[in-house]
Length: 92
Image (cartoon, rainbow, N blue to C red):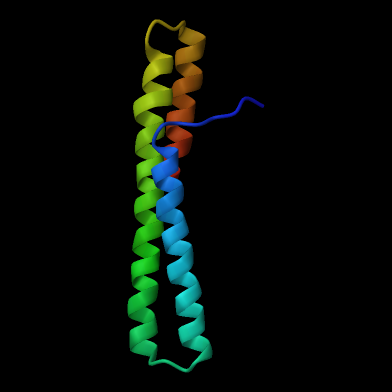
């Protein structure tokens, strides 16, 4: 399988690593018996960070992979690209 890397992936990796660190802190909060409200608030932040990373990944894929594959391609390739677009939008 061909390696699939975009220029935005490095920033996305950094964003996810920060979310991972934040999640570890939330786990520690639970282990230490922190307030459920405070833990829920922090989990909300982790959830949003991961959701935003997912959205950026999908946007990047649409902007680069799908857009590029539609330009000057045959109808079979365009059909494959359209099916891939439909598939990835399920994750929005």
